Image 1 (cartoon, rainbow, N blue to C red):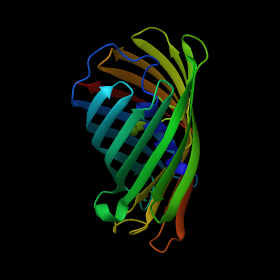
Image 2 (image 1 turned 180 degrees about the vertical axis):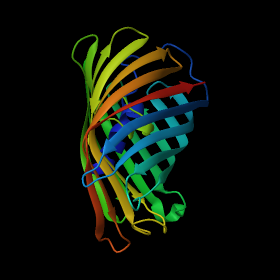
Image 3 (image 1 turned 45 degrees about the vertical axis):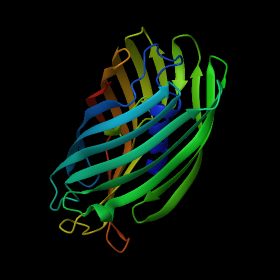
Length: 299
């Protein structure tokens, strides 16, 4: 399920369910700009067979949204990020910096007080520095519907079709959940940002209108095109792990937020396939902590 499920959850957390259970009481501009940015550092960790590495990930996205109401909107966005891998103790490094470019369109439209439709095509290029964008380009389409079962529960069947580098397009049905267990505690498919590669299942505690705490876990798998200079020339690299992330968020209601994150990554593995699709490199790596800062504002 890899990157596909991660992307799906990220999209829904931001748009399909919205950020609150009640529509905020402020006027909506015809077109409103937004900006998101984040940086996450994975501390140095040892690899099976020798050597070590650390990663600094960052991302920035700008967008424009047109809102007719809180639950009726269209948004476009463009973003760039980089995963800066630094290896040590190896004869040949499997890869270096990985660039990430994204273009997206999203629409959410309420049919009535309970039913909401949403859809979003996007293009994404994820490749090592020096790689042509076309060689790392994949497309994704996500769509579905959500239904509100009263004030505490919203469920949404969704469908995702996503291209993968050197793999067939993958298709997934997904069930989305937003469950208010109590007035302050909720279970959500949401709560992350691109610099953390998207969210998974989150337990969220609304301490106050301004402060929010959460714990998120997911399965993370990044595939990217490699350039013609390294270990697997013109091949495909992959980094996968299972992170558990704690977040402390401060909200500048209703215009944005800033969040500090602390995480721990388990079951990590790096691999690389050559241009013929043969695996030539594979290393497991030890569990490692991570920390970072994420912010988002709309104007």
